[in-house]
Image 1 (tube, helix red, strand yellow):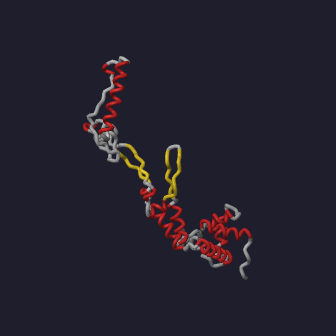
Image 2: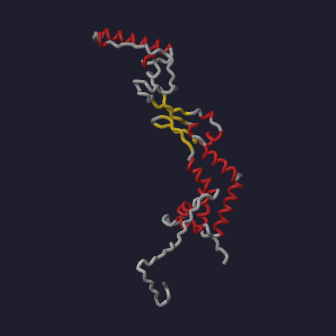
Image 3: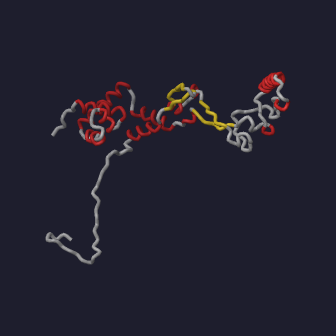
Length: 244
């Protein structure tokens, strides 16, 4: 018997299937019961009319946007293989005491050192005007020298940070992103804590590639197990039908 025409709900299933190529999700969005959506979707995909309509819709969409299957797979593959560290990294960097002489506080430049000297002189003057005891007067220590490099690794012998340094988030200038990293990048979001970098879902991309290539099988086949009974009594009985 020829396959009958599609009902409105079955037509909706075909349209929803193109969204994520998921039989269960398409069935649920089309209005079928959520509990049986997986089985319903599978049953619908066994109908030639449903498959023919999905193929027609895919061909229509492909013609409309002029995108080939190879182009889609290339885009998804680029996202799946992209290295997120090309967009954002966490560095563990040294503290100000790690590489200073004698593990004393290290200044970055001579200008920073001169600014610190001037501030200390002002603080010392105010403390003396307030008749602060000599033992409590602020002391300026410049023995650590200059040359602090914030990107340098922590010193394992540093008594201040104990070799752990501190975490520093490094965000790549998105104008310089190329290749797969550029495809992975999905914009930024301003939050109370600062700038949040958004990336596309690599796991989802891998899943879609797998579905397009037929790597996943959603069918669950159950077979009746074979049971062998061994007679340990030493007796064998035969019923009237001759079954042992």
